[in-house]
Picture 1 (cartoon, one colour):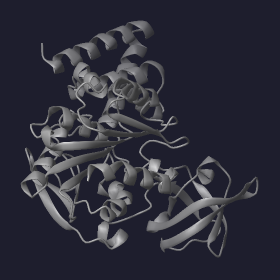
Picture 2 (picture 1 turned 90 degrees about the vertical axis):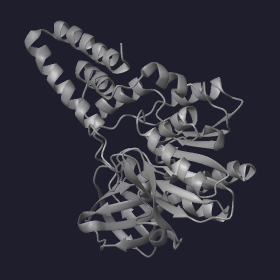
Picture 3 (picture 1 turned 60 degrees about the vertical axis):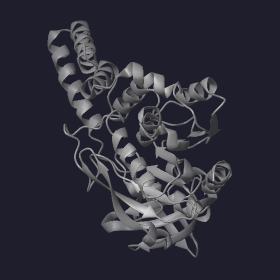
Amino acid sequence: MSNRAGNDMRWGTAAAVAAAAVGAGAGAVVLVVGRRASERMLRPVTAVQESGPVVVRSLGTGRITFSPGPESRHPGRWAVEWADGGHAVVEEVLRSDEQGVTRRLVRADQGTLAPGTEVRFTPRVHLGDPTRAFGLAYTEIAADGELGDLPAWYLHGKRGTWVVLVHGPGADRQQTLPVLPVLDRLGLPVLSVTYRGDEGAPASPDGYSHFGETEWRDVEAAVRLALENGAGRVVLYGWSVGATMVLQTAARSAWAHAISGLILDSPVLDLPGTARRDAERLGLRGAVAELGALAAQGRTGVDLADFSRIAEGADLRVPTLLLHSPTDQVSPFSSAERLAAARPDVVSLSSFPGGDHATLWNTAPDHYTELLRRWLTPLL
């Protein structure tokens, strides 16, 4: 029996059990809604996590006061965005009480802020491309993927070790921008890559995200591109399911021998657990959430046994920096702890308390950057 058939059978069995449990009429509704929920999980559309609306209370020189709430109090460096393309960047909390939360205003680079403006906090501190964000020169090139050309930013460096950056699903290459300055200072050539389903890249044949099960081959194409253009070794660095793709590439690629290190930011290591959380984040509960998760797994044909083996580090051969948060709302922190405990010989786990999924840099940008510098230096 094929893996896809086995997964579809599990979906069908679970569906039948759920329908019987809730009654024929209600069960049919649950199955339909569960199936629709899986559609949303398999077609990520939100590029970044955004807060609920926050209101600007007042503005001063180098500071801004927001309505109080968990979003406006979140530590670290964040963007605030508002209607008509407005974008500003804020940092540390200067004062917080029931009257409001005052933060340092770093810059307001698009649009006009005024008291009463309704904004949303997002991790998207840097916009555009490496030149717009930091003045870093880059070249737009493409890896030769099995479905077609895969656009990538290439940043020159003097080292023989290249870094391949893989953003998470629903995001784009802008997610990789915050780490470019430290990689540039270390003299590391960089490829910030795309994969099937991204804008400018070939579509996935079925239009679905496959939790890295097929997308890892596009990461492999980027590794091949680096090696063909002078790389001696490659460090793979991914966010969210992009980090999962990195793990799968290191385990499965014919060029795995050239991979010298992995950096995994908020990797998805527990696929069933993440799928259930994703369903719950869509407002689904109980049988609908469970069926949505099972349908998402079954429809992608993911080999759960092989996925679990890779996620537990069975194939790890190189130093691996694992960055995760105990408060991650998408990927359970316990899965990162299991991986670190299973492979202490190669895995270093760094925790970011108070962080959320794939926004660890925002929570503690200076600490995050110094961690990268220290970990990468011995690999140069």
